[in-house]
Image 1 (spheres, rainbow, N blue to C red):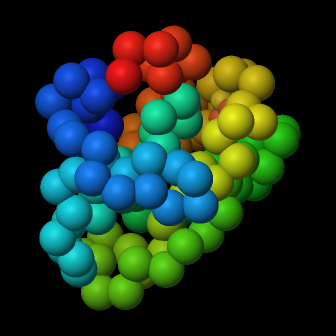
Image 2: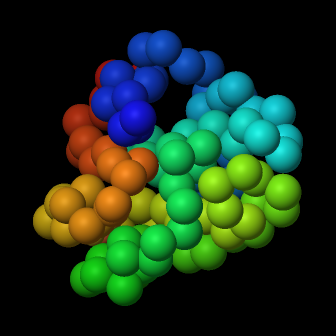
Length: 109
Ligand code: SF4
């Protein structure tokens, strides 16, 4: 299952982390929501492969802890999504399609 590219219509913004929106549901430890709006990572799909952190040319992502999550206990959080240059490398390299990048989404929410 890939991230829902229309999540801003189907989910509610329930929290914020490092200035980045978190879209619910969030029910730890199993449900961690989608983090980010321009650069969005579905934490419930992310398995901490790390290719996005390695390949992003402007270092948008950093690891955060998600203890006891069934897929992985760390996740790629888009802390610096405002730096994104829309190269789409992270979308291409993610092995589980956990990332969606859409610069126009911020204008729709
Ligand atoms: S689209 Fe490119 S610049 Fe933006 S977060 Fe992904 S890898 Fe980084």
